[in-house]
Image 1 (spheres, rainbow, N blue to C red):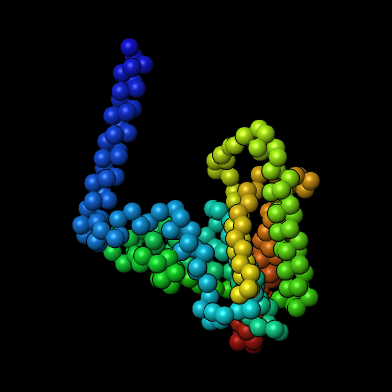
Image 2 (image 1 turned 180 degrees about the horizontal axis):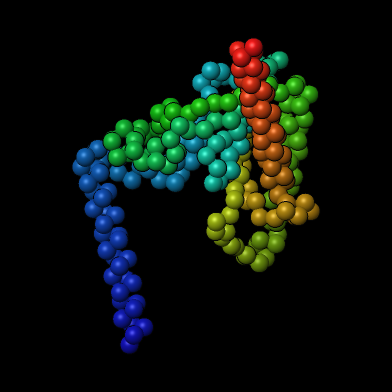
Amino acid sequence: MPFTIAAIIILSALAQGQQLDLEKQQAHAEKCGVQAQGLLTYWYSQAVWEHILPQDRPRSLITISVSLTGTPSKLIVRAADAVNFELLRGTPLENFDVALDNLNKSCRLPLNPIEAAKLIRTTWERVDLPSNKAAQIHRDFTTALSEYSANMQKRYNSLLSTALTFQRIHTAQYSVVYDNRFEHAEVRADDVTDDPARMDPIVRWARGILKLSEDSFRKKSNAYLHDGHNQNARKLE
């Protein structure tokens, strides 16, 4: 009997929660229009995040963006042209999810995620990359992508024979988007191990970019502080 009562209470609470969600959606639809109902989904948010890009060079020759769940910034390696290569770090001025929610509540959330991305105010830091370093990054990425594709084929027969499926919860995940105007690729890879022999090739590559970012922007910050210290010292003289 206690189990039955507990089950009824849980089901009742779930029903009440669903009813509240439905009432919120209906109220939002009445306020902002039916077309806005249910717009702010996980996949919509992901599409907006993907299109947060620096606007100074909208037609870079090659762009590789790297994002890691749980971090507020995204990294971009790009060939702005044939001789200029950069590493950028973009961080929304406001928490990304909060910014989208505020746009949604104020009925300013566009149906097109590309347009929504333009409304997310983002600061961009950048450091120059030597051409040989940029070439190595690109080569390492295409190699990792080839390994990633090979793993798909390796798993084909075992997946069909075992029908094994699983779902990871609270797992760090890298999202990488590559574009060179001819080829476009989007890859997601879960970071579940530190064992180099078992690590996903995309994760291995993305970890390298994250480390490069940390080192590069730390050096830039230290150089900025050093220059500021020298200027203050000269003023005191």
